[in-house]
Image (cartoon, rainbow, N blue to C red):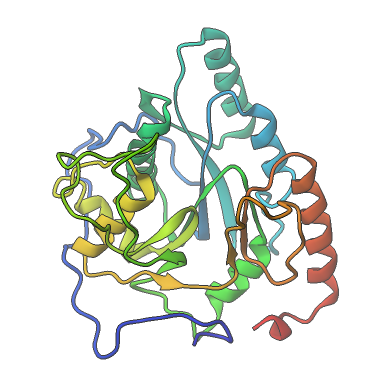
Length: 295
């Protein structure tokens, strides 16, 4: 148990990371990464949000709610950036360029946006983070989630929370490989019957050393089109065990997507007005509750 939240770890001494610290050996990117802008300061938590090029309104909603940095000048700081692929729509592409000039938070890759290209997005996002930023933790999230960012930062900053070897989220244990249907995977792509354990891709946290290690393994583990399973494969290769945290909420499809969970850290399937609603509700609770009572 960490800080009052249940997690599951292998017993005994953790095995060594199967990698060395990755360092950029050339100016050329090893992934599809295009962006070369650097972080202006060191961040305790770096937030990378996967977003489709045309989702302008969604990105602005995140900027105006949980993605905004409202931390104090003396406390741990965080910053949100958005990961985007390319689009064949020239009008959308031009609008993205203007968006980045205004916000300065768009990270782009040299590939066309597609559902099965999300692993390329993760690769280029992780490389950008390690190459151009200094941070302690990284939250990788989709743009249809709500994050109680101040609460997450407080949790990660607690002495009892591991600062290294952390891969944290809603864990899927030995999930089966789908061989049929819309999202089927062929034996040529993956021969096993079950994937290694992984955190669901809607939102998960990695410590800096893990991100650095995974980037170094991009040349060892080929990109796989199921992005959360791909991160699990990288973590498995690196001897990293995913950690379950019950406050990463992934609702079932028959749930009311906008239900309020007071102590949630990451909640999936939150869009539109629901995002603003949950942000206001959580902000009210956070401002009137002693932080220690959350843990």
